[in-house]
Image (cartoon, rainbow, N blue to C red; front, side, top):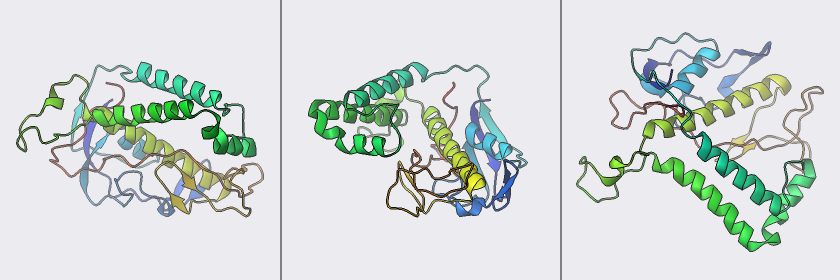
Length: 248
């Protein structure tokens, strides 16, 4: 059920989590529940995807308070699909297609900006539209009015910080799930987590290999799409506490 939940997740210990029949040390990864990856220390507000992930990992969750929606819809679907299709087609025009893999993909990515400067600008615009669109859902006052008074963005029908929180939470817990499954399959953990990349150790110089050759247990390097951590874990009573999710 989409919503915002006041719940204590400080008891969630990820150092021995069973994933696909194997034990994973989740303490070697950032916590999927807090903005900076640290462990929760008490009750806080979380959107549904985060709370659902704690349940999925096998932990008991007892909400103290909640704001939920009983009528929902896939609010961002058409917008997301339009941007996705535009991005895929633009990258294909620059020689980066979905059929490429390994070294071919890396080479195509490296030379794409030399193919057509106009298409490079279009790629940048698509990314900015996606990032800016999500940011607009929680646009703050730009000094138009005194602090704590209503500002123009609040009158937009598209102003909805709960949707932004749910989008980021979905991405964060989805990424954490992939990291846990990779650790279970190949006993491999990242050495660095950036804004849009996960860095794994590699025995070779090329990132063309994947982080887990599951069947053989071979280590390689690779990058997993990532986004910054969402603003889950807000303190109780926080004025910006998230409500809702992507389906609202």
